[in-house]
Length: 385
Ligand code: IPM
Ligand code: MG
Image (tube, rainbow, N blue to C red):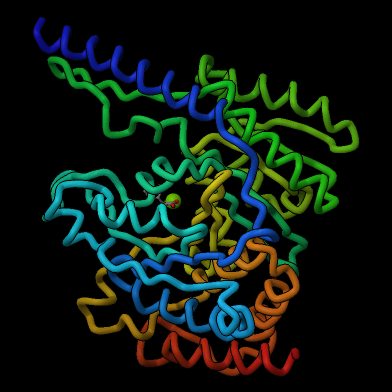
């Protein structure tokens, strides 16, 4: 009985906190205008496991591309230490308060993977640093491109990043053998992600936006997501809109005859998490995929994979593949307005990883180190001029 009234109180608290979040969303202004911003501050967090090694590579490549702006002070890097699992465990928080203050003093952040504890791990079961950062900085759009040119695949996933099953993922209740988690979908939260997906489609000439839900079963939250997506689609008559359920969508991504028809996909948080790992696999695995976490004020760019602690304990961190962080760097450059340089880095990555392949990382001493691969990519960029 006691457990039950505590659970009901928890539900009240969750509702009140979500109402506050909606009010904050509605009060928010427009996206930062990087063209008028000086300096643009790029925070760099290495993270855990292989994170520091692959993040250092991406930082070096970005520094080479942004040399003129770094020289004039138009762009500055700010290294942020301390987003490590040891520090997070010691203070019992997903992001230590001093680190959060440093993050908030930047405009964009390049972030290496961080370890996410779960029940039974040697670490306290604190919230994931990624999830906490997405919420704290209100990074509502997780944009994950996947491209396999040889198969005609060119997808952009717009994963809602602050709501769904992740909104209150650490606040479920357990009463007498019954565990209940909560999923949250709001009008304001859905409208902004769907609109961003359509705006992207319009800007890049995509002809189709696809919403992915399980609205036939998860009727209240996914039902709302789909209903709002349909309504917003009417504002973009030149773009075709369709919707699929997550189960059949997962199957269609392996259907070689149909999958090239998809272009922009917009979907709730958990489905986006799962579907983007599947999608990245066609491109060569999660190690090859970068992602942008975009909000109105802040943006954070990261790999879509984890921190691979085993590679560190086996002494192989220097052989980790940095291409996910380099792909994330392409998205970062594009976001802060250096579109031509983003294209140059992207082109160099395609040449080095898919075309010439003079060296390759294998994750072991049978292949190149992440630094050697970065050197090769920088030489290739220099050749491109
Ligand atoms: C991702 C990751 C995270 C997520 C984990 C580390 C919490 O899988 O960025 O896709 O679930 O969002
Ligand atoms: Mg994931």
